[in-house]
Picture 1 (cartoon, rainbow, N blue to C red):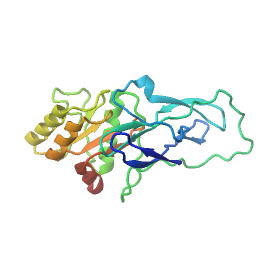
Picture 2 (cartoon, rainbow, N blue to C red):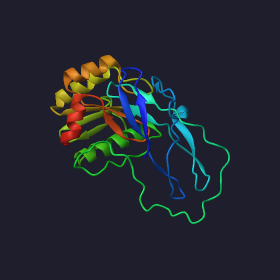
Picture 3 (cartoon, rainbow, N blue to C red):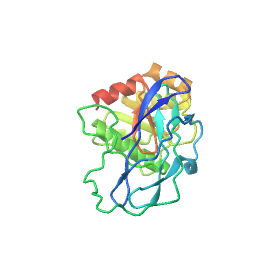
Picture 4 (cartoon, helix red, strand yellow):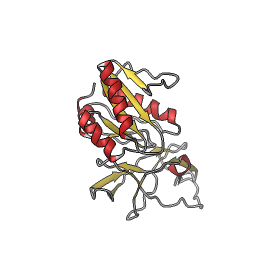
Length: 238
């Protein structure tokens, strides 16, 4: 995977962004062509049509839609990483090219657990499923995903835990964090929040005060911790 330097325009923090790798149907691992030196943009509003980029496979010439590269800064800002437009010309397959037997996926953290294998998010329901997969990876084996969202807006339940998944296009508000905390307090369980569009600054401050773990997900389905309680949960697991 290619590492690209990225600076968050909100807090000035420098990052080394690892470009995700995806499997082309022909078997070749491909990655969105990140534009080095391009201006990153904070994501404040999401539209599904803008969250995908066209990537061409250099082996077979096929064009496919893959998630727009994104980076979740610890300050809570979600950054859109610019990519080069896909070229229209497509060379033929490379003769004698050996196809890989394994396509690596990015790790979310250096832990004793095996690497988390994410799923691509295309719908709000996919976001809930991806969060459930992540919680199981953390060690919550009995994660329950209701068929319909209840009035409490609790999307996932497990022994000792409830979770909410915000798949809307706006940053999560502090009231949503407080409602989740109250539900967890009433049930005497841990509360965890997942968001696709990140968190408002006051929502993150409220979560820190209430010790609510906050995770941000990009469209590859890889949750990233954005506050101390989330880092601790990632480190210790269930």
